[in-house]
Length: 320
Image 1 (cartoon, helix red, strand yellow):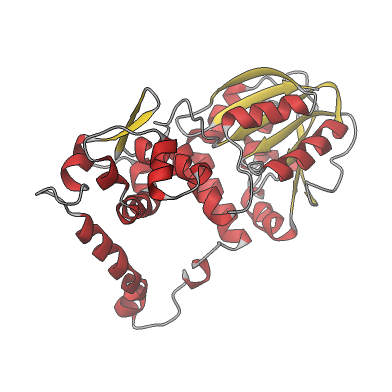
Image 2 (spheres, one colour):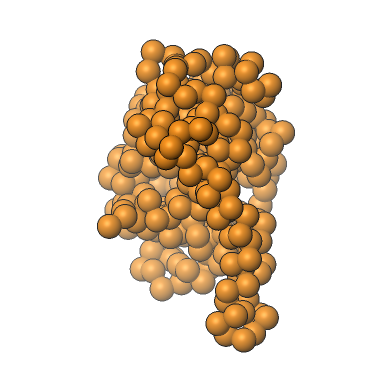
């Protein structure tokens, strides 16, 4: 039986596998180990884009990583190296190509052309994206955050880019004296308003329309939460500046996200999440856990804690 997370990641997993076969990575490696620079030179690709992809392959057990070199896993050595008797790379590519026809399966079964997922071919709309992130948050993320931070001395928190407001709900539930301001765009807040309407904490959660990279968060704020919102370098710098301006002296900065750590390439969700960020923002500089820590320090915050939050996410706590 596959785990829930394995099932959730199947679309990304399949893309990584087929892309690796098409690139010929497994055939190039065969029975040897190579550094990312050696592979990049052999393939004629950019190291910057190749390394996150290789790390994703490691997280999925398609590759092994040791002493700075990537090697085929036993599965890949047997089934993904062209010329080997057990090679099935051509089959994977065929299934990938034919999968496009499966987009019509809903209409085939219902006899209708109004597939409700049609609008999701590409980026999801604000409502669907908000619901999707709320789904993941409910898989232990919000509960873990509430258990990992101490807001005993905080009265006002800003949840910048707070989406559905889920994390504000959990934190306000734990701290009855806490009030939170969720700042996000109009479409996202419309979904958030609907989703928190039945919560006991709704009277202590304010929904404020704004652009977190531009609009002020307020003054003398006790804590700023950036949950799953800052991944691109230039955007993160703007948001962190805004957070610093709003925080009182010794105010708390809370950053939660799916930051990939090159020192831990086995982290499956964060490795695939980084690839997803690259696909949707190919020209951006996507932050990893080390570069996010460096960015926070550069913005003159004092980092007090960096740790895994769940098997998927990381937590950075800092003071102004």
